[in-house]
Image 1 (cartoon, rainbow, N blue to C red):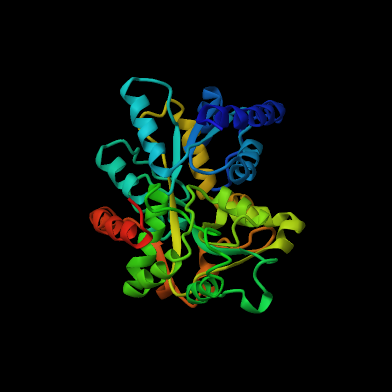
Image 2 (cartoon, rainbow, N blue to C red; image 1 turned 45 degrees about the horizontal axis):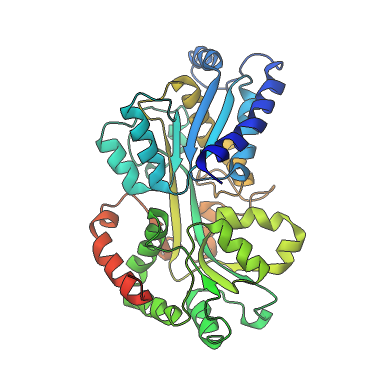
Length: 374
């Protein structure tokens, strides 16, 4: 499906939702917000629309948009699901250069992209009324806030992996693959670091924590000639069908919502990676080219509020706000994952560190050599 058709498919249900809620009346800012916030909300109502560029699906966004429209009726929300993280910035910058209609809000998992965007002077320095509820790492740059910190996990087809052999970490996953080397040749998958910044960031974060042991694990998996994918959706679907037996570093935000189907939940298994759990920090910010800046501020504030974080949790993301807990449809939060894997020392965070850009060429050279890629 093309990017334009993705946008059309997403806008129609949101348009219907917005029309259905206009009759509910005036905007309803949360209690405790500044007195002038209502005037901004009314200005957003007059703007009437909001365009968001992200790498997240309609399934991820649906609970957020429903909650937002219940609080702010009359704002039509469109989300454009782009193929990879860097596309969100490149598309915006190309459209900005020609004064074309472009994103009012950007939400993506690309720390290097966000740092470059900030250095270009394209990120609006907006202080949210919710900012005080977030730790410093949740506000990494002026105007940039954290949507979620999402894990990359191990998954497998339960019919192909006996219960006694199901891995509970990366070392066990590699041993399982080696034990099935002949049967599983070409039947394991992951994100290709050579395909996208998302794939590179997750793999680099893991290697930065595990070092030579991580490269040795990759070399052992390379013997099975894995087939790399560009996104988590195809990985999950092909593991479900049995085309792949198992996968590593699958984005949990594409996988966990599918477990709401009882049949899939019986068929699929998964695990965290306690040796070095990759976690993708997803940022959200308002570009200076936003034409509906008031609506963008309202949506950003809603997403980083406790209510918005819970809504994203229902959509499959991993709430990062400290006061949001698992339960009531939310599988995990950042804090609960840290507890499950044994503490912060076992997290491999994709964060705002220039090393991700600095080490790119050296990492990619070894990655291609390890997996026999040109």
